[in-house]
Image (cartoon, rainbow, N blue to C red; front, top):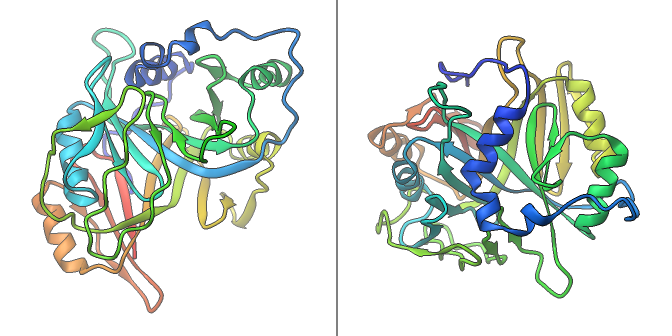
Length: 325
């Protein structure tokens, strides 16, 4: 699925870095990032890192945070959801496991045209030592920002988080929230809201009814990268993720049941996270399709087989999503 408003390729990654940092409110929400500097005496973290979760969460940057959060609350999680009002309004939708963090779209510079997009994805590694990781990045000469909290692979912003000693393998969000693992809700049940942490707190409900589907975590992400072979090689070198090539122009990374698809970005487009796919409980695709269209989504024909049902749509901001039942 291709959005008609796909941004053009930019000459440097600086505007991307500024947008991600601004939209996540990184420095204000996590002051340690401002203090963190590479330590020349630190021993570089050994490679490859062990990936605990391939996709812990994704972040989107949109012009109207409340509108987007209301849409996904109708779809995945009614009732109270975590969020924050400062330094920037954010909401978080839980996928059990995994999450979608929705934040404001920030222009790279005054007057520059911008488009809603998936601004990053986060993977969870262990063991993880931030100081040793920054030393490794210096040695490897890997493009990074926010003091190594993000690396740029194939033009895609990838956040790294580590499970801290003595704590459960939860996700620590860039905006300051921690998500504890939650049991999968029963099909048709309203998922409980995850406990907010750090700068996140329970926010007033945007939608109090039954969500359209019951999510069960990420199925896959599709990444359009600047250089397919180089991106695949860097994922393997840093994280030990051996890419598989089932067809020309495609590299697959997998941890457990979650996949990341790498494809070559067209020369006319900026590298991007094109699609996120969520596993859901069996659904009435006709009812869900009608409801999504009523909410402003553009829905493609349903793909059905004896093994699965896939419903693909573009949300009101032009972001591509898939439901896999």
